[in-house]
Image 1 (cartoon, rainbow, N blue to C red):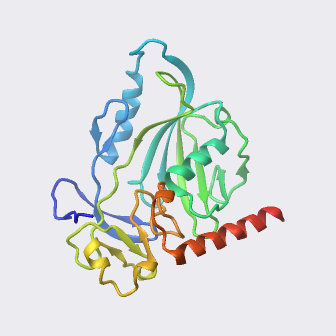
Image 2: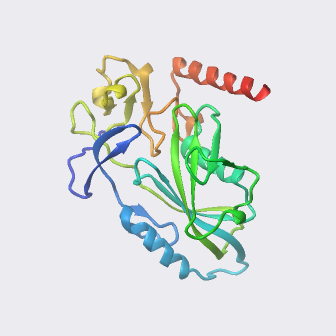
Length: 264
């Protein structure tokens, strides 16, 4: 893997919370999947709202479908975001599955939707059309131990024309933040030491990781997710990544415990 220099003036520097810790990093512009234009974190939402209004059939045999337009952001760091259209016939369980796949799933943890944190849970069988009220907000929690908390903002209904009859359409996702190495500060971090991060440290570039005293068995990859560095999260391409045996044993142990809880 080539080293990526963090000495760049292309993006504004942010000081935000990554996981449970504060650090300085740069946030590249993100792409609108409707028109392929690039926008900052603050501008992407306004653009997508206007871009959706301009959508019209461009090919034959396009299909109209009723959707709910919404965004999802990490509660601690709004630079992690997703803008979506989700079919009104879909359920919260379908939405939960999508969030797990793109951002969260590591050990089969439990999750919930509610109207406020630790409030009464909304049934996963609830259809999206029953919660899609413009201006409403949902709270989504994944893993009730090392919890990742997301805020879901509902902007209202949208009827769209798309070549494929998809239940969930990804309108935009934040570009991966460029986080500098904690040890040298010169190159982009690609590994997270799960031991050192408890001391607000441990984000390592490829070069510094080779000599890091804790060893690679303690590493998790830096991924484009608010779950980066938490539990045993390896990213949405988990099956394609080589997982250290010690970490795989931890994952299997947690999955076994979840199965036991469900049997009870």
